[in-house]
Amino acid sequence: MKITRNVPGILSRPTTTCIRALLIVASISSVQFILQHSAAYAQAPALKTVPSKDVIAFLNQSIQWYQHIQVERQLVTTPEDVNFLTSDQQAADQVIRLSFDFATADADLRAKQKSTSVSTDQASAASQSNYQSLLAMASKADRQLKEDQDEMEGLKRKLETASPADRAKINLHLLNYKAKSILT
Image (cartoon, rainbow, N blue to C red; front, side):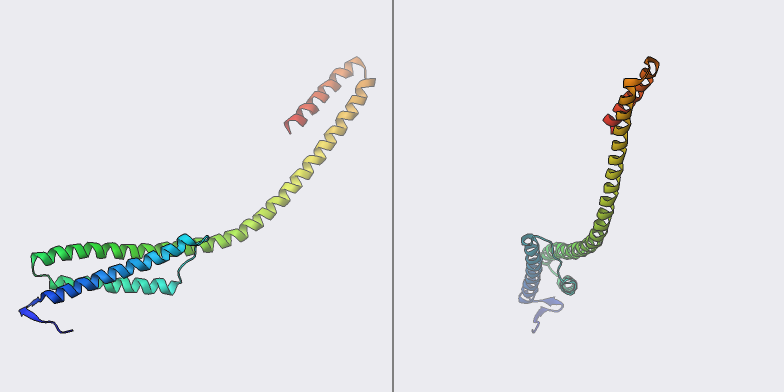
């Protein structure tokens, strides 16, 4: 591409327009890339990460595009160009921020999926352990209940043949066992 100069140090309007068009195309392609991967995430029931080499390639492309703003900055000579540069700089800042947000979100998702797979294994082991503990506790509670019921039956039999002084003590023990069985 041949750069024509009307005044020393100033690029012609067609060259500036060409650079503007390149920046707009780069912005649109970056946004399309993000939207394509966002759409893929929205459609998938389980979140999938983009291959890491693609994320790195996308970041490299975004950074290279962002560095072209420096070239545009050198071409600014008129107040119109300053306005355009300011607008382009804001768009470039947003595109680069979104590009890094995308990469960060992808990295966070990878870390979360990695920790989820590890914690799933740990959770199943812990769940198995908890299940066995609950079975042991239920078995112990059943044995205790059976012992208390047997003790109550024995006290009821003693109550039938006990003297009036012993009946008060036996009734007190029976009440204690009944209260204990209600509470447990």
